[in-house]
Length: 400
Ligand code: ADP
Image (cartoon, rainbow, N blue to C red):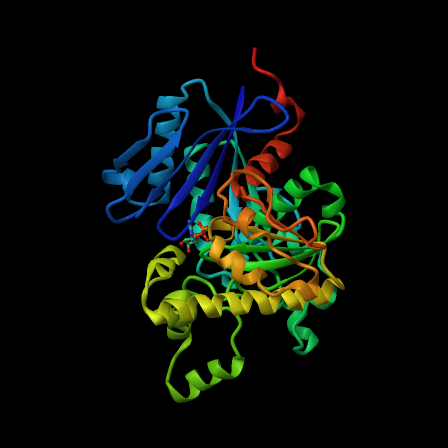
């Protein structure tokens, strides 16, 4: 039986999941991550084996290639029969060219590298992950799955900034991100509620990074994220939408250079910056400090504002979907986003919203014209499916 490994490389982490290709749908066997690569690295994994947690010594913990070797060793130990036939990678930026998962060869790798300046905080780590996997699994099919790809079908109006046209041609566009998550949610909705999926849907991916995407018939119509993963909603440590005049002011009058601005906008702002307490919604919900409530209040204000804006783009709304860490787990955030939205035809069922249930679930009342749903996202599965798809039909053979 063939297997697919998915990798999601961050600055100091490498998340993975191992899938068996035994039927129409990849079956997840193990998932985990190496954290703190280069400094006290640790491997954690769970699945069809006992929970694993161990420190990585020497070269295994030194870099992404070492982490990849450790993951490989884990697979060899717990799944000795496993044959990794493809490795699927999450790649944050696919530019204007990549509209679908793509087998990585030298040309594709060079193009991913060329796009690194578009996502300087993420793309270099994605590249490290790819190179590490090429070393650990020589000759194995490597597949790039782009977070931008889902949005490539959005209309031109949603794709441009009102800059002189030459900038658009040079790649200064609204790319949108969290595409693997939107892809999963759109697919899950189409399977569970095809009529609704054919209509006007807004998906709110509310995690540490957060964005919203408008869909018509499952096709992207616009997203709150733009050229970078900074725009749109307020996030854990990122500003989200900000008046560009603020940036000019900080450069001209407070002496911030590009590096200092990047640090401010990506790492010191958002829930963390406004609360001064934490970037973690759980910590803010538990806090009694007024700054925590103010930060949550602004987070919700921004979501409500974008909800109205995207509903305007769609010409109305049939469904609102919450997903990712906060969207799936915070009944409080969902309730406050959905409060007083009867003008939109949206009425939340408070009781259903408060319940913790697995899977796709409805949290609006039967009278609500707009269906409100919670759909747990699964970006790894999207990568695994894509890699399996590119592997071709013979990987879906049933085991002997
Ligand atoms: P990312 O993948 O972008 O790092 P996640 O989708 O894992 O982020 O979401 C992380 C966020 O979800 C954090 O702010 C965390 O506090 C929040 N979260 C997770 N569980 C809960 C919960 N039970 N209640 C409120 N917030 C939660």
